[in-house]
Image (tube, rainbow, N blue to C red; front, side, top):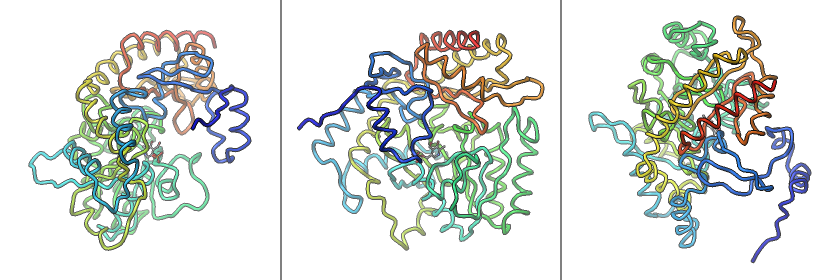
Length: 435
Ligand SMILES: Cc1ncc(COP(=O)(O)O)c(C=O)c1O
């Protein structure tokens, strides 16, 4: 059976605009519609045959490459055998994947038993981590960072600090602390004032006993804000002293993207109590997971918690293949070396173009931030949008990010090459020059 699909650009745009709910329509990045027909590794082709280098990685979902042949083959072979097997039954593919994921977690003394709960998406995993932390600690209050994004479900919105993502009807019991943004954070550069802020917030905006704190080791939608050295470690000490857990959201920073480590939090030598992952885990196949210390997950056994597609074997087969490809293709190493080269070129662009106020990130998780004036650091979303549009002409897909939409985020498939680094540099250079 072949279903008729009309690929015409204008028809597709019209159909989408007519039948998608308003809640899904705002999020169109470019002025003119774009219809992608094909992807291969770091490249995309639109319906008119134009080729693009994807620096957005389809919102960081593409870890090892668009339609990576090994991931596609693993998923297809599983789908043909048995597309879905509900979590209630035993199936070897998710069981193997749970074992393999647990083995990627830090375990320096070999005394941590990591266990896995698969979900359909990142925000479901976030919701579950919130419930797990509250169930284990018996405390309700959670801490989150102001420029954090943790997902669209009501609970995930409640710990998301960017106003543009917060809708009416979120649950409460969340206190926000200032993000340790070394470029424009409210306490300037440094770590201690931000750690003091955690203590102050626990004492002034919670009951004094908390369930935990959510931290992205490198904030993605926040505009690539790296947690400075010592912050996650210091946060864990303060949060644990108040009865809470450290919950690492590795949805964007995980799976080797930061270059030096499999998990972004490892850069700080801290071991979280719960780790949330999604996106790159399935290289485009829908999947999320909560990985927690066994004793922390245990109280959840008192009630049912069932994600229909959670341990879907097709997505888990893709996930297993991702882990294998990460090793075989030396993907993390590539993220480190190509990311370092791109970072250097972005710094060179900053020397040339005064609109760039900051360049930051690590591995293949990078951003430039645009400002109206380098002294006042006033965010410049207009220039950001103009550069974003102009780079499209050079065949580059970037992402506007940050609480003020003043950052261009670069989170490509981690197979990006050195040749692409030149292309991105030249495309950005031309875009700034054309303003
Ligand atoms: C850091 C972070 N956490 C959680 C989520 C939510 O994941 P999902 O969109 O799969 O629900 C996202 C999604 O962008 C994210 O970037």
